[in-house]
Length: 252
Image (cartoon, rainbow, N blue to C red; front, side, top):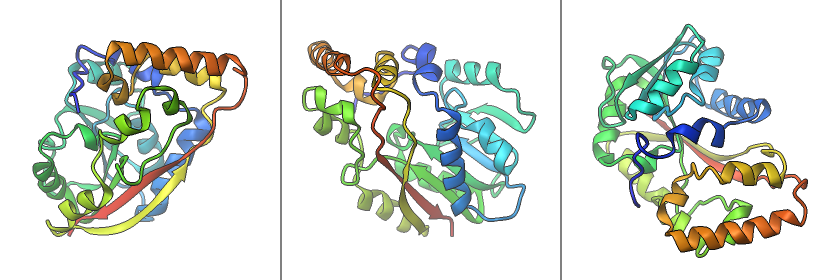
């Protein structure tokens, strides 16, 4: 996978390209709440928090949250937009989380695991910062449990290229369980429609998905041309939904 430098790519458009409607956000917050302890407040970490897409909603639902993000520009955008008093953003990464040991009840990594360069170190660091029994909510794609967004079929080798970015599920589980973690749950979440196909095309044109960074200019041009032709036939049709995997891991 080609690494994305979010300080030079995508940061200007990321918040707009990856925005979630209120119903979509509530679907995820409900899914997270179903696998977290019932007591409130909980102290949380949003690891790979980006422009703060989830951080304020996590704080509103569960308690104080620290967003941890390596990209300076992504953090700047998150901080500029942050209005919740129980949210803070810090420079860091999954391999180096700048909070005390045993200080968090849970951590969320939402579509950030594939960006982690030293995954064994991240497994150790996540165990360090969570309390005993703390939970990691890993919303990641897996090469063998892979959502198939409707628009991928229009890009050359779309499904193949997208799946190549991610690890298989069993490999991720083995990495954690060999370090003493246990699987607390695995399932899928069906996010409500993101609007119309035309709406989705406008967001895709911002190219804020890692997938687009893996394609050459010719494949990008061909894919968007095919996608635009398909959407033009019925731009007002609802964008199809698909099931997205959520792996919950519990710290020893």
